[in-house]
Structure formats: C-alpha cells, structure tokens
Amino acid sequence: MTAYPKTAALMERGAAFLGSEYAIMCGAMSWVSERHLVSAISNAGGFGVIACGAMTPELLDAEIAATAALTAKPFGVNLITMHPQLPQLIAVCTRHRVSHVVLAGGIPPKGSVEAIKAGGAKVIVFAPTLALAKKLLRSGGDALVIEGMEAGGHIGPVSTSVLAQEFLPALATDHLVFVAGGIGRGEAIAGYLEMGAVGVQLGTRFACASESIAHPAFKQAFFRANARDAVVSVQVDPRLPVIPVRALRNKGTEAFTAKQREVAELLDSGNVEMIEAQLQIEHYWAGALRRAVIDGDIENGSLMAGQSVGMVTEEERAAVIVDRLLAECEAALTQR
Ligand SMILES: Cc1cc2nc3c(=O)[nH]c(=O)nc-3n(C[C@H](O)[C@H](O)[C@H](O)COP(=O)(O)O)c2cc1C
Image 1 (cartoon, rainbow, N blue to C red):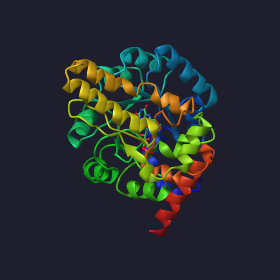
Image 2 (cartoon, protein in one colour; image 1 turned 90 degrees about the horizontal axis):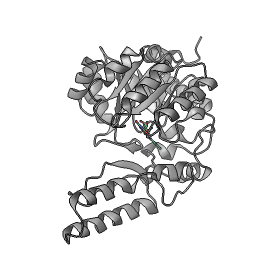
Image 3 (cartoon, rainbow, N blue to C red; image 1 turned 180 degrees about the vertical axis):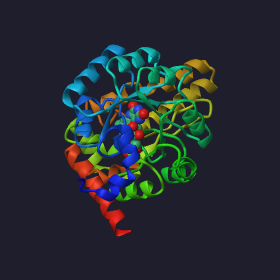
Image 4 (tube, rainbow, N blue to C red; image 1 turned 90 degrees about the vertical axis):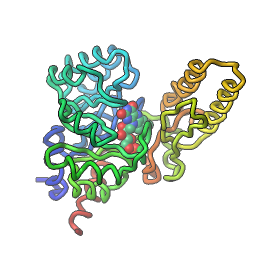
C-alpha cells in the first residue's frame, strides 16, 4: 500500500516502464551521477541514471558493476550520442544487462537504437521538436524525455511549460513521456502528470543530495544561489557557435565571454583560421564541470545548474528528497 495513491496512479505507466516504485528519474549529471547518487535514488524508489559522459568503455564497465553492487533496483545509463566509442559503450551496457539506456546529446546515430534493443534494454530518447519525437518513437524509442530551457547543463531554446503543451496532448495517449527542466517541488510534478506525463526527471534538485560526491564548495554554491543566478552561456560572435549551457554565474562564465571577444578579434585581424578559432571556443569548457564538481573550483569551473537551484537549500538524503517531492505532489492532487 503506497502512502501516495493519487501520485502512484498517475505515475503507474511510467513506474511500470522503469521498474521503479515511482516514476521520478534523476537525470544523468556528468561527474555527479555516479554509483553513490545513482544507487541512492534507485534505493529510494526513484530511478537513478549513470552519466557516462566522456568515460571509456572500461570506466563505464566498472561504474555499472559498482552501482549494481549498491542497489538491487533497476537503474539506467546515459550515453552521449557523439561519443566516439558509442558501439562499445552499448556493448558494455548489454553485457551488464542494464535495463534502460538513455541516448542524449543529439539524434541517435544509425543502428544505435537497434543495437541497444537487440541487447535487451529499453531506449529512452530526447527530442527538441514534436516531428523528431514522433520519428524517434516510430523508429524504436520506447519513451521520451522533453527537457525545457530552465534545466541545468546543455539546453534547448524552449521552456518546459511550452514543450509540455506542445508534446503531451499529441503524444501522451500512445506514448510514455517524461517531463524535465525546472522542477523543484511536487506541485509542479502534479501539474505535468495531470497533463499526461507518466513521470518526471530532475537533476538540479538531486545534485546536492548527501550521497552526491559533488565537492562541498559546489554544494554550498547551490545552497547560496537563486533562480536568477543560473544563467545561459552567451554567444558573442555569430562565427563562433556556442552550445547553450545553463550554469551559475561566476568568474569562469565572464572569462568565457572575454575569451570569445579575444578570439573574434584574432579572426578579424586574420591572425587565426576559422577552424582553429572555433576549436579554441569549443575546448574552453572541456574539463570545467569536473573542476567544479570534483575539485571544488567554483570560481573558474562550470557550475551547471538549473533555475530550480533556488529551491535547493540544504543537504538532504536522496530518500528524503524523493519523499518530499511525492508528499507535495500528493497534497496538490488531493486539494484539486
Ligand atoms: C551538473 C549537471 C550536469 C548534467 N550533465 C548531463 C549529462 O551529462 N547528460 C545529460 O543528458 N544531461 C545532463 N544534465 C541534465 C540532467 O540530466 C537533467 O535533465 C536536468 O538537470 C533536468 O533539469 P533540472 O536541472 O531543471 O532539474 C546535467 C545537469 C546538471 C545540473
């Protein structure tokens, strides 16, 4: 018997799909979503997802094994589609009988969805437009995450509330849709469930859980921050593309803007080739998230965070956060 019957009823399809008690996913966060946080979320009745990021197949192999040693519950693995060793990473997931693979960071390359399914796992995809979502669901995607620009990390241009209105009425009857981006409390979860979502995905709200290995300085920066501190990276020059990332404003974000100006001037004066200039911009942030999460360099590292960061005020166990979200959701549904 669940303590949250209304919530459980609306999450039933999502929870059955994930194999978890509740359809609350903790979105993969590079460097943060490793064995400790992932197992804690799954043990709490949610669904943890390992962030593979730039890991080698050997590292992913070890991370999955270590996570499985900490939880008997299902968890997923998030793979970035442009990883040069994607096929080998998929093979590692298959060998470990990982139940769910989340494909992030772009359109899945040909054959990848098929390879995951042939290995027995379910495939969760992201799609920025309704047309692409339909295509991915037609060609093997088992569930979809829509993620609005309130989210932390790499983002698209559209807000969660608008994506929810565009995607849920069109897809929710026949497909499994999870909503992500800007969710900090259960009342918002209730709203998206009522619109037809089968579950939700949160990142920022879980990043500072007690079980998260993020550096204490990283967590303190989250506790201090307000929604308006989680800003999108600025592109200074149309010739130098910047993939939008939402992170807490710090010295590093300002220095990045200055760096773009400097490279643009080098381009103007003919002192650097276009390819070299674009590479300089692309590589600027390499390793920056690790510097903040692991080393605690909150001035120069990348403090990726969503706008819900203002609702993250103290370190709590993952189980406490999951339980609070469920209680808030249930109370909201009961008051309706
Ligand atoms: C620090 C951080 C790192 C992230 N890294 C990844 C990643 O490696 N892969 C990915 O698909 N999403 C990544 N995300 C996005 C989350 O998985 C999740 O979708 C997002 O945080 C949900 O929005 P919210 O932050 O508003 O809760 C990251 C988010 C944060 C805050």
